[in-house]
Length: 98
Image 1 (tube, rainbow, N blue to C red):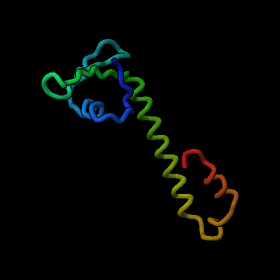
Image 2: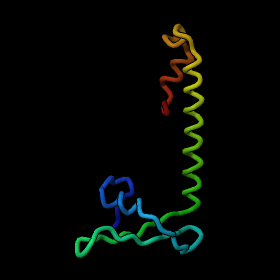
Image 3: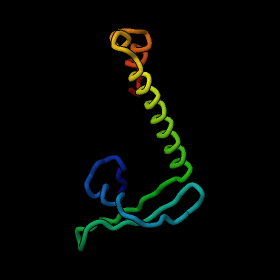
């Protein structure tokens, strides 16, 4: 049975929080087994990750953070009149990331 990582179930969050090394299956697949709970109520999870995708996701997050930081600087540098209504402000407000 599979679970989405973003399912926000308590058990999935516990499994994701567990430390441990991933075993390399091949260049695109690393896995680790995690047991959550005790006794018969325990659940076994096999976490899988693709290191290349992980790196790409990290780079994308860094790019988004950089863009948002730039937008924040632009907003803070505008005076009150410019904040009320300018083309730049409209562009900033309509930006999908802000």
